Length: 504
Image 1 (cartoon, one colour):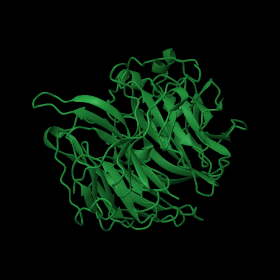
Image 2 (image 1 turned 45 degrees about the vertical axis):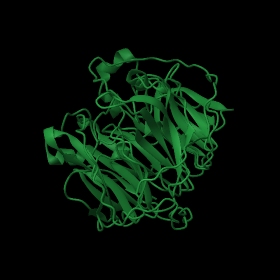
Image 3 (image 1 turned 30 degrees about the vertical axis):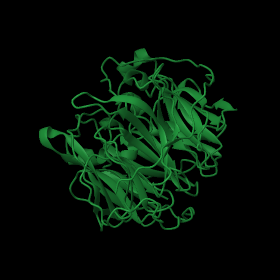
Image 4 (image 1 turned 90 degrees about the vertical axis):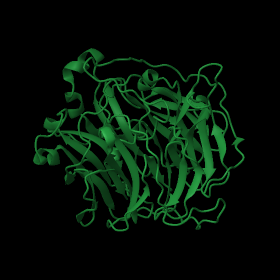
């Protein structure tokens, strides 16, 4: 059911000073393919496709709600309390050969949940009882569209939530309810398809993509492009872009923050990460030009209630693993550095939420990526490799990904310790267990990195793996093989979140 609400402007940016410049290099590999990033919504959200795909054919979303859509303002169930940390290791959901599998890390039981080979992006519900995922489907001309599904953690109750192209959906942190965007539309819906709310109707353009829930589950923020409607066939023009917010029951739709100024530079804002204490939202803000974006955008924080922005970093690639809040929400780790290459000029800095303090905790002789805070906030796990000069990158590619290792350090950058060292693997995507005693990570066999395609099912099954180790690097053991998504990625960036999720 469509509804209209008064749209209230909450906040706007004020000019802020650059926090300082560091050495910047814009290097490009002559043999690498330049990735054109779409102007709308290409920031912190993980793109909808697993690998590079052709432009999608226009589609019309077909909605299949399990129950009639809810009326705005209809009371929803009381929000649950945050789930306490598990005493065990929990379960992982991962993609193998295009199908979703689940493995219980405490019992080692492994189970296949889908069989059509077209699935990506599994995500656990906050209580671990549901998984949402997306399907890629062939359509006319060999294009790919993405549909949104949910199912219970044993594979039963599979429900198609939306049959059209959907941008990455996100679960509420406090209930089995999700938010997702279609072609300009925004929806809130429960795991079984009930209590559906159409917050904004589809416009036919990709005007809404990245969405994020507040830590208390009460609100949703989303990036929104606004267009001036023109008579057909005259194309509509963009008249604004910014962050909007809506309550979980569909009320209170309002603009939260915008940097758009049509008279000067049309800066856009990409959602990064909401701080765990709910007070701050980290964003990328800068030019919508694809070339500029591929070299990195400044990082700002804005108050979750709206207001002025504070710049924390001069340049960081708009990638999910390049921003990480501390558990208390008072500090944020940023992978800072200009240029598209992830193996050059990438260093971790830690800044206070209000921008009053800022500390570089990486050595410029290395390229550090994917910071992950321990549950107590005392340590940071990260990926590290020797920094590579741009002129050397072409010669060493793709070996630059093979030499990545998992490290940990104190949150102030002291006591760095290398945890992995096997020359047969490249290691990435570290994540802490709920009790802080273990680190899960992804490994790629070095011999398969950079291959255009594995030659056999056996080599594909061996290419990418999920591993677990103690937080000091001891007792390293393989949990699963055949993980989809291996390779080198765009200038060394691999979005492992498309293929793996950990319920802990």
